[in-house]
Image (tube, rainbow, N blue to C red; front, side, top):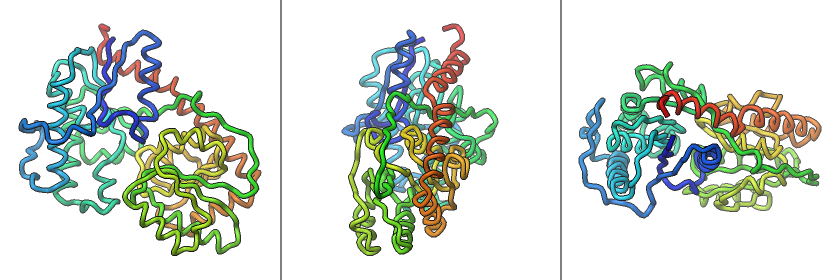
Length: 376
């Protein structure tokens, strides 16, 4: 069976898809199922000219809003690029972005299509202050889910909580399969070490949705309580200047290191002690599984896929979102009790190896592909 993994941007971009799909490709190729990747280069902008037509709703009333116009133009660009560069036919397409899925089904209607919804673009835009909940951009983006349901032969997502999120926007939520992301454990090499001062690390895009303002306020409270630490922030994004200014205002300049974007943070994480990320929303939160495989204690917010990965007090600590005091209390607990911290990290590693192995993902995807294309 020849399979195409249709992505949005190239797989070197940060995020859960990039952490998994190239390794999925490698495993399938090794077992004799040829698999290729396809994506839209960032340099392709404004090329497509075709009208965008959907079956379940009319996009025209939403035009004139910048987010919608950009989305539709990207759709046209994906059509243009696919027609230009796609020279092979595949037995099955597995898409990992709505635009990729809908374009592939438009151009190859007879090819079975699986679609994994990895995240909520509209929720991120709301949390980042870019669009209003219930506004036209929000309505347009959530309408895409029913279009995907109509077009895809199989819809998947990455957590039970995200399937619940999709429920109001589709007709048959019970038909959406759940396959959590998986990781090649050979990429992760825990290192035995003892840090004199506890080293905290977070890895994410620097956008409001990730809650790093809450983390900095929690760290300021931690410092007021007299607990030494160093916070390492790996990632980049539009609010980095604001976060750096907030660190200065909170007298945290000497306690925080901003690294910027890093392609393979898993090579860096094993030298630290605690992974913390107080996201305001998260469909899955791949970085928590990655941190667990590096043998780090986990602290996250009780939202989305994070709460499915962390059993509070066993393999990590869960705190409410938007609560710097609760986050500071959790940090204080892991900083002052190294035995508790070590045991949580050990349980996190065990759970991640058991539940988020790439072997498990390969097995589940194979069954999905066989169901969609049984004669292959």
